[in-house]
Image (spheres, rainbow, N blue to C red):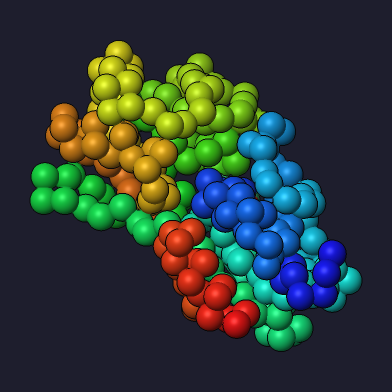
Length: 249
Ligand code: NAP
């Protein structure tokens, strides 16, 4: 690789990270290296180099940045992946390698929505009324807390099966987004759902469930995003390209 090519470490696991890798791979000035946690067994195809698995905390990222001669980090992890973002910001401070964030905007509540706002998974599990039929879309890693509520019926939708077996009062639906608003409405009706639990992930791929609850007047328990360290941020790949141009000019 010529010396004037900037090696960019993309912390990935999101659609935005994949789109950024594709854009950088097509731009002669950059060489993208995407890092995945390794939690998904069948990740989507990603342009450029890929590495998989934890780094071993902020120290591990710092070592990696030096070894791989990384010019800049783009933290494009999911808005709810708080630990890796904290580690990346710390490694950036330790090494002087700049870190930028690519993060999709949060969904916004509209006047016709019926959202109960909670700050975490525990709060969401507690907020479900007794006897509810709940659609839970928080991912397989955090579904166990909902399985522990034996006084509700849980329909848990996720991409890959959970580690914990579903109890008798729960069912697991395996499905990969995107979904249409009609598909979401049909699911809510077929399963006689009375409340939806979701993280405020933002983005288009899973927004149809929000539109379906708005259309039907169904209540939503909305889990707020965790705090992440303040960093120069972009919400689209185009905006990120502008930031990169400024930083690496
Ligand atoms: P997390 O809690 O923030 O991170 C836990 C540990 O996993 C980190 O300390 C790190 O291990 C490792 N890790 C996380 N992301 C990594 C990456 N991109 N590359 C290398 N190591 C990574 O993360 P999480 O919430 O479990 O999310 C894991 C991955 O799934 C992320 O890539 C995220 O973008 C994606 N994802 C998460 C969600 C969600 O709701 N949380 C949803 C969709 C996709 P070490 O400390 O050993 O380095």
